[in-house]
Structures are given as C-alpha cells and as structure tokens.
Amino acid sequence: MRSTVGASRDGRSAPHPAGPRRSGRLAQNLTVRLTVALAFADASIVVLALPQIVARLHASISGVTWVIMSYNIALIATAVAILLRGGRLASTRMLLAGLALFGLASLGCGAANSMAALIPFRCAQGVGGALVLCASLPMFASTARAGDSPLIGWSAAAAIGVAVGPAAGGILTQFFDWRSIFLAQAPVAAIAAALVSAVHVPVGTDGATDPAGDAAGSAGARGARIGSLTANAGLTLLSAGLIAALFLIVLELIDVWRLRPIAAAAIVTAIPLCTAIAERAVRGSSTAALGAGGAVLVAAGLLGASLPTHRELGWVTVALALLGSGLGLAFPGLTTAALAGAEPASRRAAKTVAARDAGILLGLLILTPVFVSQLHNAPNRALPAAARAVLTAPLPLLLKLSLIPGLEADYHAAPQSELPDFGPTFARASAAASPSERDALSALHARLDAIVSRAAAGAFRLPLRYGALFALAVLPLLGLSFARVRRASTV
Image 1: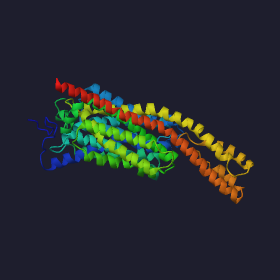
Image 2: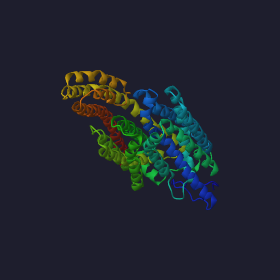
Image 3: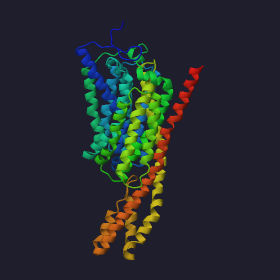
Image 4: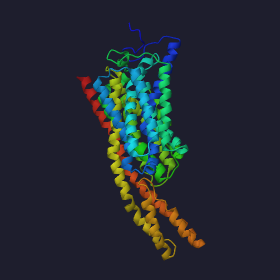
C-alpha cells in the first residue's frame, strides 16, 4: 500500500488523512489553481497592453505580435523538452523553479524600454510558464479532494485564466500603463511560490507509477472516447480562433472605437463571466458534446463581432458572451479529454500545453498578415467617401483646400493601429472661421471620423471570420473521431 496520498485507478483521488494534512492539501490545491490560471492568463492579459506598446515602443502590428508569439514559442519548446525528458521530473521543484523564473522575467518585461529588450524576457517568461503548467497537473492530482477528478479542476483553472486575462489587463493599463501588466505578475508568482513552500505536500517524481500519472477522472474517462490526440488537435484549432477575439477585438475597442482601457475591460469581462457560468453548468457532460457545442458558440461569437460597422457596444458584448460561453464548454471539455491517459501527468500536461499554444501561434501567423493587409487597404475604402464629404461640405472652397494638407499629415502621423486625430487641423481652421463655418467644420470633423472608423472596422471583419472558421474546424475533427469509435464498437 502506498504511503503517499494519490489517485485511485479510476482517476478519482483517494481519501486523504483528516486534520492539518488535509487543510495543507486544500491550500496547496488552491495555490496550484492560482499558478495554472496565472500561466494560462499571460497570453491574454498582455493583449490589453498591445495598443500602448505599439505607440510607446514605436512598434508595428506585425512586430507587436511577437510579444505574444515569443512567450508561446518558448513555452512550446520547453514543453517539448519535458516530453523528451520522459516527464520524470520532481513536480514541486519544477513548479517552484518555474514560478521563480516567471516572476523574475516579468520584472524584466516591465523594465524593458524597447522591443529588442522585451522579447527575450518574454521568452524567459514562456520557459517559466511551461515549467509551471507541466508541474501543476501531478501536484493537482496529489492534492485533490476525495471523489474529485483533478483533470476537471486543472481544466477549469486553465479556462478561467484565459478568460480573465483581458479584463485584468484593461484595469491595470487604465490605472497605470502597459508595464504594470508585467510587473503585477511578479508578486503573484512570488506569493504562489511562498504558498507552495509553506503548505508543501510531498509529491514524488512524476513517473509512470506515480498516482498522479493515472489520474484520468470520471470526466476524463468519458472524454477518452474522442482520444487525447483528437482533443489536443481540437484545442489547437480552438486556440487559433480564440486569439482572434482576444487580440483583434481588443484592438478594435481601444484603437478604432476609442474606448479607454478600463471601458474595454468592462466589455471584455463578458468572456470570463460567461466562461465560469458555462463551465459550472455543464460539468460532467459528454466531452464530445461540450467540444462541439463550445466550438459553435465560439464561432458564433466571432462572426457576431465581425458584423458591426461602427461603435455598437451592446452587440459586441453579446458576441463576447457567446464566445465566453463557448470557451466555458469547449476548453475544459477538450482539455479534460486531452489529459486523460496513463502516461506520467507532466507528459500529458506538456502535450496539452504545447497543443494549445501551437494554436495561438497558428492563429497569429495566419490572421495577423490578413489583418495588416486589410488595414493597409482601409484608406482606399475611406478615401472616396472622405473626399465627397470635404467637397460637399457647406464651406468656402479655399477653406476646404486648406484642410487637405493638414488632414493628410494627421493621417500619416497616426500609429499603424490607431485612427488619425484630425482635431489639430480642424482646430486651426476654426480659429479664423466664422460661427457658421465653425459649425460646418465641426460637422465635417464628425463625419470624417465616422468614415475613417467605419473603414478601419472593416479591416477586422475578414480575420475575425477566419477565426470563426478555425473554431468550426473542430466539428469535423470530432465527427471523424466519433465515427471511428462507432465503427470500432460495432466490430
């Protein structure tokens, strides 16, 4: 009989001793949830900082995506290294090392004053994040309460972390600036490391005979019908679609519709709220059904977000609520299925983490060029309507002609991701204008802003719809897997 507490052969954790040890395990269980949410939230929390990074560090849209991609590339590389190592690693030491590296790299990111300095620190954060995520599953399994499936708790923490990130990033950016997003992660990592050390429950090397190694869970057993390979592929496609929402919609809210970061965060909060509600409501349902239903809702949310041509906050909030509900269904369901199996827990976690972050890279690599191309074409879509607006305005011809050089200069001075500010040009023209001309100038200013905003919003339409296609691609994947299982069961 094992002396350490682990998981039973059906994946549910065995009863733990009563008293202080049980409370210690509960505290460590909650701490591991925090670390999983922190590592998964990183890519999404950074999204709210990207508009400021573009402006403050003079980066392009294509360049600033490396703030996300560098983290994910390093995370995938580290996860692959853990797979090659065989997953036989001391979970507690790996978790503490990952938290230390993640926290120190977060401080470096916050202090960076150029993209060249920021990217290496983001890579270091990715290495730390991979260590945290791969170590967390065996620790989670060893501290789960009696009767609980560790996979469900781990999957739920991952989904909530992804969903909460943008809202948290918006609040920090509003009250401080983009650096605070990184600096705030350092004390969270330090607190998590301190808690892990303070309430340490021994967890051995995560080998094939470790109790954590066969913690499939009851939900995981149901999810195993679609297979871990299929589930990981589904996570890749779903993540590719989700990055469209977390990156592009935030850019549109802040740079096109000119919302303050905290206002954008309030709207994006629809994602974590609906994620938490949906995840709790359908817990224990069929994994294949959760994956399919969630993919449909994510696609519907992305398609809905692509429709507005001007500032329609209510509509976008509904679209994000659909997306959050889909995330709450599909992400935990597919993650639970992907983690099921008899391999060492850290190997299973490494595969799932690599699959999810490969999807983020896939989405960025495909959707960013599409978005940049559409953004470059936006002036061509806006120019005819803008020219008509200026020519038909009830203003003297000389005054109209005097506006053109200033409007061109305002357009070229705007960062790539932001709308031009025509205010200075109209302010100069209004200074020497009559009262009636000032009214006409004000109306023209509002009309030009609306034309440019509508053209810029059009740049988001195609990449958001491509993101929806990524999510919908999960459906035939699950269908093929289900059909294969049906054929095997009839043989």
